[in-house]
Image (cartoon, rainbow, N blue to C red; front, side, top):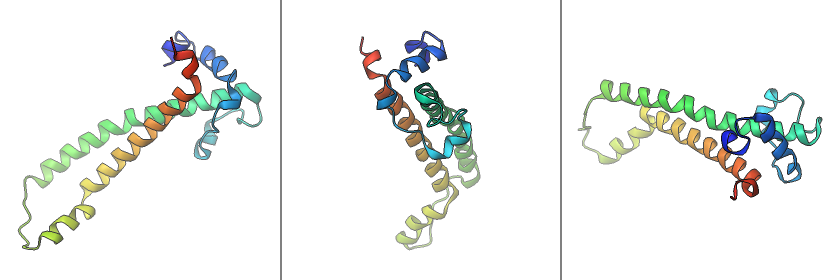
Length: 133
């Protein structure tokens, strides 16, 4: 999106976002260690820079987590194999999924997708007028 909106120039995108600083949502509090200056201390350009960095971080975390969770899922498939539970009780087998490593891998994947989508949606809402060509 930086390539489309700013023709590859991050500063141009920050300037575009700073024109709409009053419409920008505040960045997540957990990412405040990344912002220099802080969004509330540096004016509209600092807020625009913080929002753009937040959107980039939220999208890039998916790029890093997805291959790792895919490899981990593949390894779990190799370890578990095609074992079918023959404990007799169907409810025991279905509840056992929530204690398996596969459940936690899927949980991480879905949380990662949620944050990536939230970052892209936040960026889109900030620049939708400029993208309407």
